[in-house]
Image (cartoon, rainbow, N blue to C red; front, side):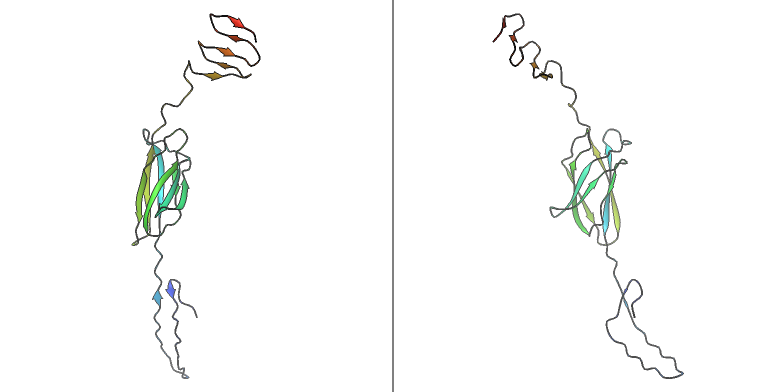
Length: 172
């Protein structure tokens, strides 16, 4: 026979002597199987300056003793949930920031308890990137046809003429 669900089967033989027209009682004790305790981490990725703005595309690694255990990517709601994790200490590290945001270089430490099944909820913010945008006027610009123009400088066309503004024109 087998043990009830959640219990370990007894591994010893139980002998019962059956006598006609009598009730025989035999008590058998089963050991309850301990539930394996695990936990998870659930992140919500948000804009540091607008906490209502959820960020998609942030990629995190979960490390235990320096070894990658899981990889998470935030969805359109800014959420990502890990697989089930054994009890212990972990580090959550951002390895790719959402587009247009700075990568966080801080690891976030968390612990999965061995006392109860739990989901640890973390809210993580990102700052928008600054200083990135269209190139400023006066910088070098590449144009189709292989010419390079620098305002106030020289214009060169391979196999053509070189002209210096306010100067002479030379033909090779």
